[in-house]
Length: 111
Image (cartoon, rainbow, N blue to C red; front, side):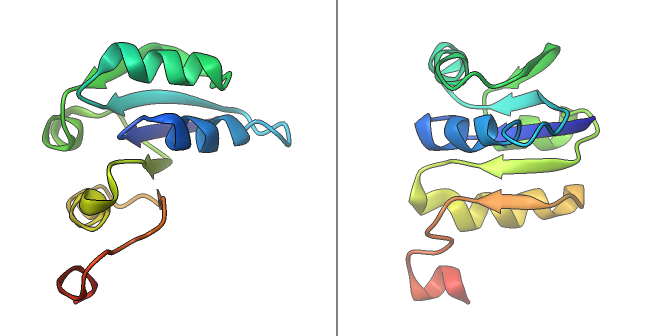
C-alpha cells in the first residue's frame, strides 16, 4: 500500500490524491500539513480520498517534516508562491514529490 502525505490540502491537492485510486492502486493518505484541518478534511471527503484512520494532521511543513510517518510520496498543494520553498524543504525526506504547477514563479525560485 502506498502511504501518501499532502502539504497544502486544498481542492487541487485533494483532486490529485483522489486520482490515485482511479486504476485500483492501493493507497491511503497518512499525513497532511495544512493550517485549516477542517477544510482539508472536507476537501478530501469531497474528492473521496482514502484517509487512513491513523492520519496525522500538522499545522505546517516544519512539523510535517519532523514528525510525519514513513511516506512513499508527497503531494504539494500549497499556494504557488510556496511550491519551490516547500519542495526544497521536503527533499530531506527522500521521497517522490508531486508539485502542482507552477513549480516556480520567479527567476530567484528557478535558481
